[in-house]
Length: 195
Length: 289
Image (cartoon, rainbow over all chains, first blue to last red; front, side, top):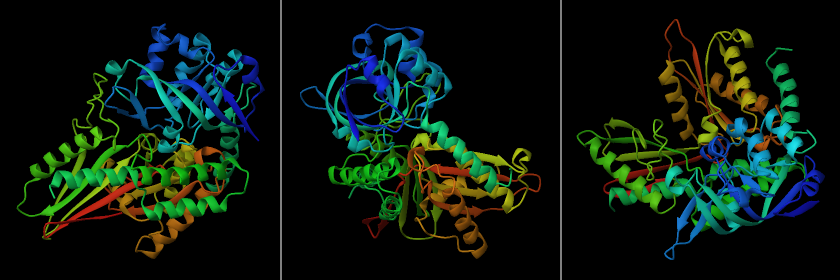
């Protein structure tokens, strides 16, 4: 069964989600990659705070088009590898009261702890599905640090509709990535004759 | 047609139109997965995305990759002509949103904004005796590039010695360690021998093979089949969600090595395996996958 969620999301709602749940996410979310995460941890800027509370961070460096009227359109916008934000993610979630992170590849123990402590989940989007996901971006609300960071690294505040996601890390300490890792480790050791 | 315009079209095709052999492999992978699993849902999304990208002429993936060209050109022509046209084409394709600006100065952190920078696009030049020009293009995703690996045999921690059995172990290790992070299912290119540089060079260039195309030597072809079967037993699946397809194919090739060294370079290409070729014959431009 697919669960429909809309930002802002309450802590109670997010704690109901479990690993394996399929979600269609709507509402305002914010893209942030390496430079944005570094900035949020080191400088704790306030300009992004109102957009992040109860919202979701999307690990994404989009292709964006500037329209003749000055507005922006997302052209291709799949997820980027999340593990690069591992040093920062838990702190960002707790500092800005973020309820979820969207990315690909999953994250590590520190983030899993952060999800549990502050009430958030990790959503997995389909990596490489750039055009499909851009289609569910209805509008660009605002952009920050575009000049300083460039298009992929800027904070893009966007409104999405029915973004298809799977919960792969929940707020109860479970991670699909760890389960697949352990199972594949067994097989790997067997095939490599290392058991 | 102007060379630059032909190259913009080559870039557009590579970024937006997945080669048919890759799409076919993805469709077969979709059919293999059980109904109602996250793996099946991933392949459905991937195939829908491939269709949409082609229809709308927008990038399959927003990471339009590192731009790597292989230019074979007739004796007597100037490299500079191609270099200028390639840089101009990359700039224009970026303006047209076929490409994301992907050239970052590692010292200042500044993105050049137009995909032109030091060694970017990277161009491998080769003069040949033919009267025609062949320009091959690879758009290589960054996430999958991060999970590539180079091993130095022997690798005691894997009990991997200096033979094919040792190579098999390090390939298993690399794909196991990559999990879903390289946007599985990947296409794996394994180069055996050479030095630090040439091992990766050989493995990258193998990515111009078509899915299902086996090495001409039976022993290597058999090794490719074995690796394909074993890697798919790992159960990592698309995006690392678990599933039957972890790799779309495995390509292997070799080159002579120094007696003291034994390198194995493994390039991991994400499922969005983007390559196209352009030919110029008698002034006529044609494209191929």
